[in-house]
Image (tube, rainbow, N blue to C red; front, side, top):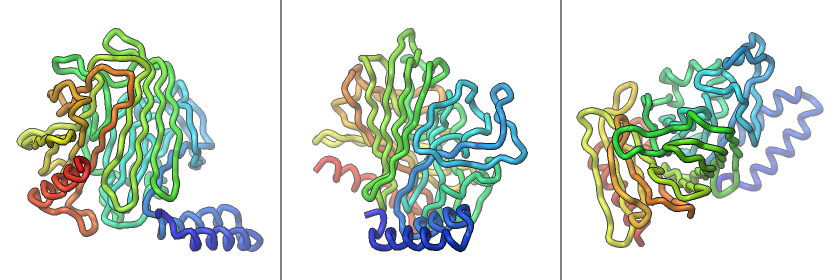
Length: 329
């Protein structure tokens, strides 16, 4: 379980009682800190309050952040709007954290963690700057650039371009936290790419003691080129493996971080759902067959500075081979 249920209930009771003696703001932060000590997964999205929109940027000197369970993206929201804390929703386990850029880029980035406690609620509180610098908890480690990052999705034109979400009517995100997992559900409405408009639903979840995010994509209609993948780096070999029982993976290992140091990235996929493996200008890709049925895959990052983590390529390959065997059994 994510929480020790008894401890969790006791903490809530203590906070309720202490409200008579302390400010509400102090109590809320106190309960967050205590839960972070026992939780093993967490997801959130946090928006800025106390400012105003000026074009596509949210401006304010006396802003604060507020966590919400559901958000419809404002029409003005784009990259570097400074409205959503660390630019989108985040989810984490006690091993690793991820975030999705909640704008046209839609890449998934990695928060490398040196600790086994929950950290996202304290990331980016100084208006986005801190998580790019190494801290006791870790930092943002992946240079996503113009790629999908790790495990995000777009539409591949069959040559070198992946369409992200530049033409979109609207998008929403719902946050989920339970005793068995945490994650997000993102709905995209009126996504225009490759001369076709579709809706797309994406579920992303992570479990305790796991690096793996499970992803499910549900398109409204059959569409060519729907893909997932991860950023490619010069000089890093692509590892591939398929199992006769139905699952495969693509992976890379090496100096793939901003520091730089060693990072392993992997995507597990159902062979029967895949049309081809390909490369775009910026990504290693898995291109799915056209379908209106749910598509399922998983992805994971393994950073060498993770607490009790994977520190060599041999250890990483052993880890992903083990996970592949579990999927196929």
